[in-house]
Amino acid sequence: MLLIFPPSAKACEPPPGLARLHGTLKHHGVPVHSIDMNLEGFHYLFNQKALAGDLWGKRALKKREQNLDLVTGSKGYANRDRYKNAVLDINKVLAMVSRPSGSLVTLANYKSDTLSPLKSEDLLYAAAHFRENVYYPYFSERFKDLLSKDGRALDTVGFSLNYLNQALCTFAMIGYLKHLNPGIRIVLGGGLVTSFMRKPGFASPFDGYVDVMIAGKGEGPLLDLFGFERKEADVLPDYGDMVAGGRYLSPGLVIPFCTADGCYWKKCTFCPEQAENNPYEPLDVNRAVDQVKALDAIYKPALFHFVDNALSPKFMTRLERSGFNTPWYTFARITGQLGDEAFCRSLKRSGCRMLKLGIESGDQNVLDHLTKGIDLGTVSRSLTELKRAGIATYVYLLFGTPWETEAAARKTMDFVCDHKHLISYLNIALFNLPYFARGWEYLETSQFYDGDLSLYKEFNHPMGWNRSDIRDFLAREFKKHPDISAIINRDPPVFNSNHAAFFFD
Ligand code: SF4
Image (cartoon, rainbow, N blue to C red; front, top):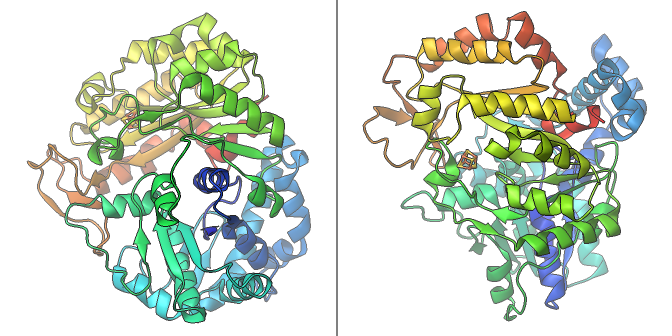
């Protein structure tokens, strides 16, 4: 089986889902090959010829190799301004080479001028008109080459579709493969596909192109597809094909690893984990630590990225006790433990460089309605102890939830200002109402995006704190506040939290 991670997403680390599938299939005797076509697609596009255009374009083209070296080597991270210029120059080159095809590619996105990834008819169009896709010259040659080396290489091809910016390219690739070999079996899975399939009443509109769609974990369904009995669960992920496949856009190898699917808290009312009712399935904690240590020994990464929705304190404690000290970062919930000096110091000893923390609001009433299960006193203590221990914090804020008023949003602004020395980075988001969220039937809603695959709905804010007011407040006041803009300006452009930990020792 051929497993593919399609363009376009940030190409800074190998995709964890593919590594998990690869490990399990190989372990059970299924011949498998994985290709990170997102990474290969980036290198293909980045090296295309382009007309220089304006002065910035000329400079970006001239410094192509130099900028790539800065982003993929430690030197680039010694100076934030130099790093920033390199990333923006790379984006400029991608934009210049992609515009003639009617799309706009950046380091983190793929946008078509005419097609929407939220409309099934547009995805089907992308499949039928695969030659129009900007990556067509790359993927057509790549697939033909694979076929010429091994006639069975393209019998079954699985795509891991996780982000909207991958959807149109995924379907262009599928369309080409079906054109090349109508008998090919196409399997489609990944986070985005799971969300599509968990929408009530979902029926696949992709017949004729996609043979099998998988929601949730793919290991079991794929083994069933090949008639193999699953003898062992939770096999060690295998990144080998992907790591050998090219140069990722990070200063050292980053290995993503998931210790648990779902979330151990699963109570936050705004969260898709809750709306989709995804089960919490942790690895046995000792096994998880053993696997991380095994991956550390095999790949010798510069950084581990634990991709859990919220890493469990139990795993963190066990990791430290194991003597582990390779750098790592993750999402974590604020709990009493993070307010404990000894616990934070133990985290630092185990290699923790940065924690991503969903604080969401500086108003306790909003937090209580969100069922975050945190109080602002604990948040303050946690930020203080993490700072003392030398662990960076990437704080996530969410504006516009149904319980937030303008006064509450101002409390969030005050909270950030009061803690400005303790917050390393900020992520600011506007609340989206999940299409199939439960318990919010009282809200007056309408279609958010124009597309049958939309995952969110528009709603009239019950307190009149609507999106245009919030955007206005964020742009005119929140982001302009000198204490807050200083934090925002620290954020690595485009790569954000994916590269943030590299700026801290
Ligand atoms: S802790 Fe995070 S992942 Fe878990 S329910 Fe809350 S928002 Fe969702």
